[in-house]
Length: 92
Image: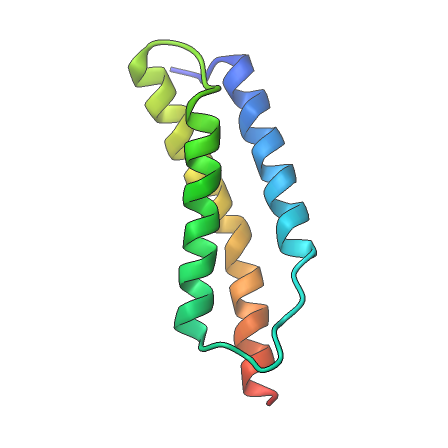
């Protein structure tokens, strides 16, 4: 069963906003451990999921599927950011 268009639009919007957040990040000096950055990114993902939880539409099953897809997409977007942070730490 395909997601409702309104939920697809919300997922797209959330992905764009999350990408903007990641692009705005400046790596801290002094640096923080990789595990701390992973925790921060996980917190950002959870913040976005909780924010969009109130905006998804449809029956409960549809809403859950939309939120799961959003979470998967945000995790996918965060992977290159975390890899870049790992490279930054190795360069120190």
